[in-house]
Image 1 (cartoon, rainbow, N blue to C red):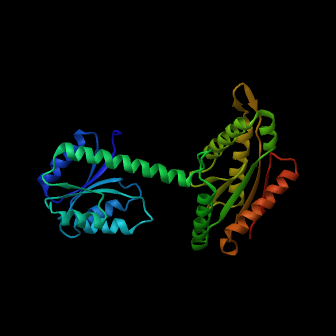
Image 2: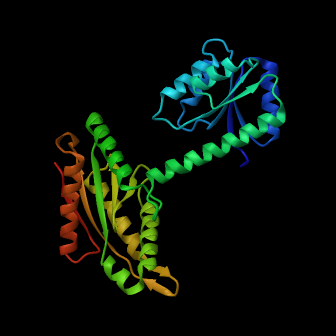
Length: 301
């Protein structure tokens, strides 16, 4: 178990609550307390909510089964592994808890070693689920967002830009002469160049920007609340960082540069994700035609 793994305890009985907290903290867990079901539900809606929860069945307001049902209904959110804690021990009660969405069941008063084993099993499942989510959203080679996710984020940011009447920009990047890199140094070196390009892109963009691998040697950057002037500054910084120092592959120093097409809109309601990327692609083509290792801009509205 990793030190500091967070576990939510939802228990309204003070003695049982203190015993659970002391026991889990002695095992290295970081405990977050909820004094009833309503507070547990609120805490579990937070973006960084614990992945593990021990929830008492019988609490005032929302009981443990209702909290589980609500969690189960929110399938779009990450899964919380719930251990139901109760003095009930009939087979029908276990079925009821599992049907409500609980992942495991521990009787009160709990036996320490039994609870410890069940928490470890839950933590392993939470970690595996997190890794599966990461693999589904990130590019295997570069580690940044994959095409599907970055396009989904562009759609959401464009919707937000329309709603808030704010600018939005995208940048489409293509590594220059990448085929030549593969042919000269080999595909392993080419993969290293792609990974290093992703690292340099991520280090150069703003905290609010999102970068993803668009395909092959192309990358897409989504820049919320970004006008023409700001988007050009971001793109120029990315271009300079990628081409600033060679990529080291074994005993080879590989020069890597990038051409970038930028599209910015101050009136997002007049465009679509596809049109915005098309404008950036046209600007990228001009950058290639003009000699590469440069940034070109198209205004999308």
